[in-house]
Amino acid sequence: MRDDERKRRYDDDPDDELEDLFDDLEEDEPTEGLLEEDEDIEEIEAQLKRLFGGEATSELEERAARFDKGRELEVRVTGVYERIEYGQPRALLVQLRDNYGRTVPIVIGPFEAHAIVTALNDDTPPRPMTHDLMRNILTRLGVSIDRVLIDDLWQGTFYAKIYLLHGDEEIEVDSRPSDAIALALRFRAPIYMSESVLEAEGQPEDYS
Image (tube, rainbow, N blue to C red; front, side, top):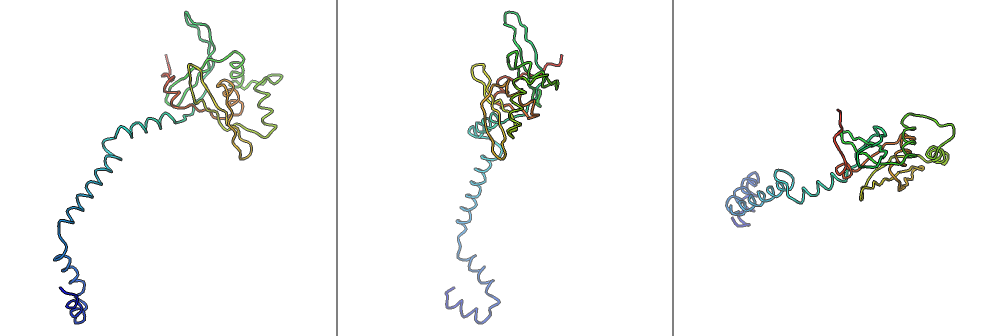
């Protein structure tokens, strides 16, 4: 229909305008374009399904694994033990346990072992020991411990960080796990461990 004819017809009967528009679409627009659009939509849906559902790609699996290893899970101290094994030197261990029942033993020195046991038992020495002194100094300076994180394991050595709070400022301090644990217990601060460390050293807890 030519434009001049359409204009005259609309002038005569404007109520027929919508009907004529749909008639023109049915007459003029090819169906091939609609089929191509449907194919494009199906292709997009297939790509979204591959990305977010059903079959996971190797790249997505690798990203998920890296995320899991970067998680930080809260652990608690279950005790301090002496390890006596044939052919091995005697050693003191502090054992940490997560909520999934995995335990991680860490070798510590005798002074640190005593400091951890003292805190676990809520014992107050007659004179402040090293970790008690550190707690007193930090408290007097208005500093608290927000959390402790055991975040790395390299060649059998564990590494930890202490996160201090001074007002609104957070301060990160490198530390041995034994010292960090002894201070965290005195401040009632949570202790965390990276999933990568738990995965490498975690063992199912023995209830026998």
